[in-house]
Image 1 (spheres, one colour):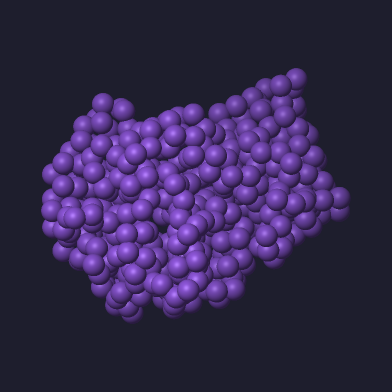
Image 2: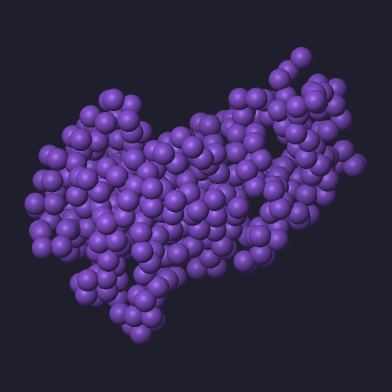
Length: 430
């Protein structure tokens, strides 16, 4: 008899995203999602084994013949409800101390991101507080934030360091992320972002050399000793921060120790960071508000995924990235919340709604961008991001007759979401 840990039975809709194995969806393919639908009162059921993998998706009548619950099986009646893949947040900065609520007033009064930065606020303000904080204090904050993400349906999240800007604090942040990865049910992709800003009183060339010659070798050694799991290398490639050449050197050094290239590019100024990243074989590039046509073409040719962050454009009043042009050119587009002290939003349903309105994406495009393509941006779409047999049983169950309600009902995710499931375990229940 099959080992059955969880049965979600009799759903009105199970949104599989794709019913067959595929790593990402590009261009016009993002206009369509695959859905298994209730017919003649015979709902759709999902079965998970004890390893947290999906055993079965199909009609409840067929499920009853094939998979019988035992005394330890968790049963969830999803009658009249919809099951979606757990959301994937492809870009966050969730480890920090202090807050920057005072800066919101500055931005509302017209201060730009870089003006706040130069006035000693922004990243540097958070760096000062994060450097002073203990590892336990940072972990407690991260744990609270990740629990908030899970309650709104996120089951896999990318977590960056980057508020340390020196070896000791960057390693402290990565240890905190590793602790969460081992102890919490949410899936985590860890990113080293030591080149997030130039340390106060320093210069970008010295900071580049420190990341390459001091921080990365330390991280490599800790990875070899199994003390850390780090997946990605990031750099803030931006005018006044790290230029194209410095960014290329940092990303290449990270790639040389086995990290995936996944970085901030073309956010505030058109530096052609996207083109540079594509040349290096970047897995993903984020922001892209100022991406050029040649940058779009280079990313499409390289297969790099564009991670767009509607909260950033909204909060900073930036020109949104040219997402329609990116998709129409054949790019795979993913979504992230950019959750950080400057863009304080951890809810992927809100991000998805903003993507529809601000970025002019359709609801199917947005769902794919927040599931399969976001997983692909983290190199995890072979196991996450869609609901098919053999993949992780990561699911969100919403009390609505159609899946689109999770996007349509702006700000109502706490009312809609009944269950969040990570690897076959219920991690949130309303």
